[in-house]
Image (cartoon, rainbow, N blue to C red; front, top):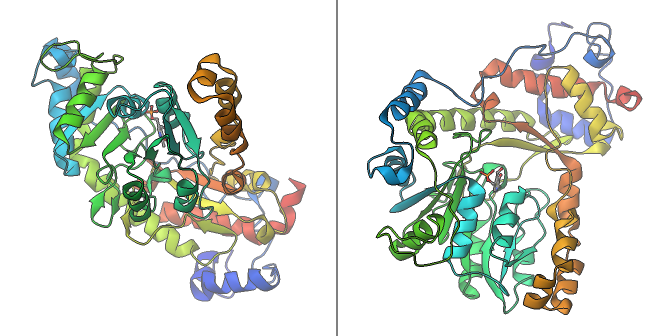
Length: 452
Ligand SMILES: Cc1ncc(COP(=O)(O)O)c(C=O)c1O
């Protein structure tokens, strides 16, 4: 693919993406004069793939220390957290609180359970409303529904994919009790504004940090800014144990209430005091987490380094826009590395055509969530339930349903092209170059994409 001493990366290095952006913004240039299309044919049409089958770093991460911890737990016979105050789960809770800089941590069986425990512990229930994002895992909404509260969805900032604070404020009613911001992709919401709105309207903030392991916003780790913060340790996450979750916070009474709720309403003193399911983390999950704790920060730093490199390479390319980060974002978990696909810059080729061509080059990006949660059947389900009609009244439920017009979320769903990044962003610089090269190769052949 050499031409006048330039290969694709040198060429991009020399002209810079700024130049490509400028070219693309005016007319769509043809690189046929620079690159030979015979040697540089798209892989989907029989050309040589940019990456081929080179594997990405394995995920979930496994090493001997994790295996040893699980073996130790198996042999110990301490398999349930209430068997010992020094078992893996209580130890993990202490270590995790230390890592995040909070006073307390309560582990749970999943991120959904962590969120659900917080809703119940804050006394939010029938008749109450919680404002959250439509662009998230169903676990976020499910955590509100299990206490029979009403999950009110606000629209997004279409460039950051995060809750739009203005729309959050518009949706506050006298029944709103909390905001549940979701740090989607593991990058921070605009927390300054969300916290200010919460303060002004006297609302609680439960951070859904399920994707946001270790991310830092204005010097604070995500999950430690609101009243309570929740994490997920499900297999794909950047700190996985199969299924698992945690709540962190600094308010002793509230965190004790969280412990009691997730312990089927039973306090540490053994009194049966409140309503709660059994959401306890088990000792094997605790062992897997403890076994990997040492490497968490190194892996986090590596993902940030690779993400910064990708963003630097792509930042001026108008065809794929990296996720907008708010001022104050110091680092992100990069559970997902997200880009918005701009069809107009690919001669009108659809995202599906682009992704197919890219995949043939050995780079798999995903459209991620196909529908915002405002387009899923749970809305009609709860609006039709007698119990919800009794709790909220038909008029409120009609207005709730009518409020499900969230065009920015629809746009995000249509444009998203993201990398499952937990493993891939631990790869080397050459692997990051494969991603950029494959994108640019497909871009250069954009006139062919419509025939895919
Ligand atoms: C943003 C978000 N919230 C909540 C959850 C629920 O976490 P879990 O799967 O551990 O229940 C997830 C999991 O994917 C998530 O990504």
